[in-house]
Length: 94
Image 1: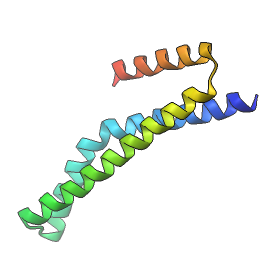
Image 2 (image 1 turned 90 degrees about the horizontal axis):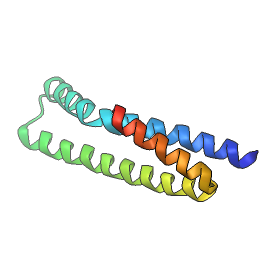
Image 3 (image 1 turned 180 degrees about the vertical axis):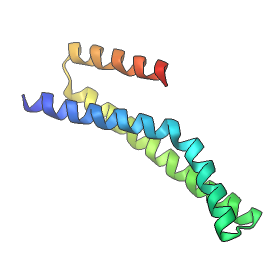
Image 4 (image 1 turned 60 degrees about the horizontal axis):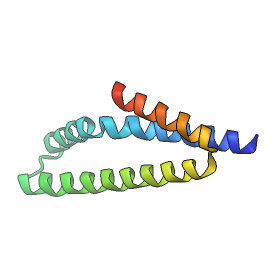
């Protein structure tokens, strides 16, 4: 029972992380545009801030993959198969 609850919680976390990653690029550009306008950023500042946002995205993606591996380690073979199938279906929708 406890493993099922943990696996479910992690699956929800992974799903949420996938949504965040899918929207990151769009949100990053919008945020950068607002910052550039509101703060009167130079082109150099915008480039540096974009790099910061990209680094953040890379770290989030790595954390997502690490979490995915941990979830798989908890699941039974049957659960892993179902979990991976659900993951692929989400990728197709996104």
